[in-house]
Amino acid sequence: MAVSKSPTTTSTTTQTNCSRKHGRDDGVNGVSNAGITGGGSGGGTSHKRRKKVVAGPDGDTPMIDGFPETPVTVVEEPRVTNGCSVGVQVEDIVEITAEDSVILGQEDKNILICAWNPIHSNVLATASQDSIARIWNVPIDATSSTAIQNKVILHDPSSSPNRDVTAIRWSPQGDLIATGSYDGQTRIWTTDGLLRYTLPPHHGPVIALKWNKSADTLLSLSCDGKFIAWDALTGDMRRKQAEAATDMDWIGERQFAICGNGGSVGIYDLDHDSSLNTNTSHSGEVNCLIWDEFSEKLASGGEDGDVLIWEKPSKILQPFKLQGHTEAVVSLCWQPIASSSSSPQPTKRILASASNDCQVRLWDVLTKTCVNILNSHDDPVERISFSPSGTRLASSANGKVIIWNAETGAITHVYDGLKGRRKNGKVITASVAEADAGIGEISWDESGARVAIGAGETKVHVLTPTSPTPTATLLLQQQQQ
Image (cartoon, rainbow, N blue to C red; front, side, top):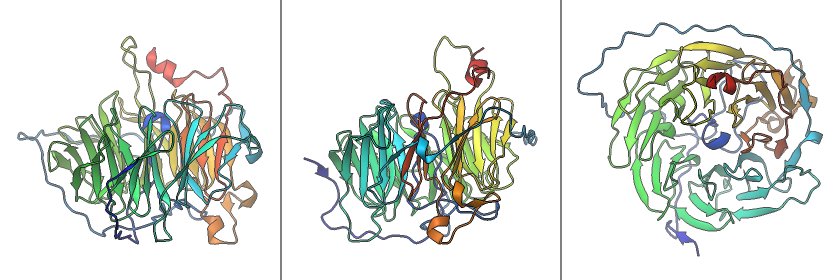
């Protein structure tokens, strides 16, 4: 029997504005944080910002400063070179159509959230606007006409019409799945779809969930800017923070980083009530941050267009900047790398950043340079995700997904869900609903053979891009030489 940690009656206050920039891609094997259902990007000028769905407080709550006792004086880093775009490299570009993909969830309302299980490559989770999440078994040879098995995870509908499942996250071991809802509830389920815990609600939609490595603690973040750390073994609240947060990531088993509206990045510990250290090096709201366990570096991206790299996040020393984007950075993704004690130290550490300037930039963090600019999108880039091997990168913008060769920057595959409604690269639509047709999520399966995209009214499409041309030298191999 499921154990409920929520009161019998709950009064959930729903906000109307949200400063959260949804959809940072990171986590286990490309599984992304899920944004509010209905978020996306329509056609129009390339200067538009990503859609803000629901709102939190207009102002930010300053964090407590916690610099080391002896401040370290750091000479301002020189501006990192912008790099030069290689353009669209020549390779055989494969166009993937709806007929080539497996379509899931056609019986459900709009589906923008999907996540492959990090361990089992055939298991895919989806969530929709009708209080339903599903766990699918999708064989590698499946087709849309195949009777694909799924388990229904039915959330208790609230009295509010806004009952969307807004976030979904597999545990690193792949044996638990957490979901967040528009009504503020967070739930933990087994892979059989059995409810383990219903956790007390936030005062706003849950927009992000993060497990620590051992899966004994779950972080949840709401549109009201508050985050809660839950004991995933008992369902109890371990700590709650009042700072206005916009994103979060674990940097250890008990420590995690939080970024906020006022340009702040702070380090927190489960054993302390307040932040250990904070820094406000960004000049505006911080949209996303992501930890790299391999190099032990933390990257953050903000409205100022800068990407900041924190060398020692446990002490929050002055970061160095990667500059080149001309508009807000909305998503960051470290390139996966083989973790073997026998592997030599790589000569590169690649970070991808996506921006409202319609570009994806690849940075070599070790040399502090931009090594490639991927600029074939006509709209602000919404999401990015490396394949588990790190050889390919998928990016999405306004209904279009481009898959790139991560070394050469060449386009290998294109999927355009709105191809028939574009003219001169822009979507020509008759209604607002049609214009709001962005890609809600990109998720690679554990084997890297398939990528699932959540695409709203067009449901979830499972794409099977063929391997890049065999003559291309893989970046991962180059790193390990």
